[in-house]
Image (cartoon, rainbow, N blue to C red):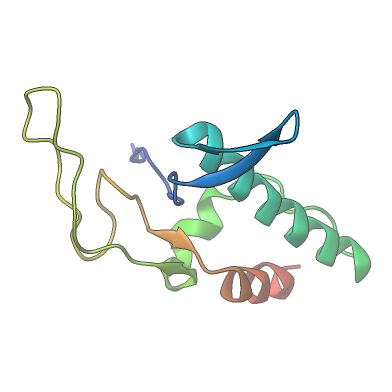
Length: 114
């Protein structure tokens, strides 16, 4: 039986600028980074549809088969709350998963799929 780690991938979650009632503010966390990853996948789907291919569907097998389409994060960690947390290392780690998306590389991989 195979299992997968969480997170699969990561994205910057700090200093996203938003506007509320004409005032600019910064937001942080997965509430900021998750829409960015969703937007990347939406752009990939749009590019596939433009050339007559179907949407990408479940992406995890493609992610793990193509780790080179991510920027591997190899330093830092998530220490806090009285724990040592985890440390980023080369390859998949429990802090950043496979890394952060590299859109041009992801687009090429997903466009090459049937």
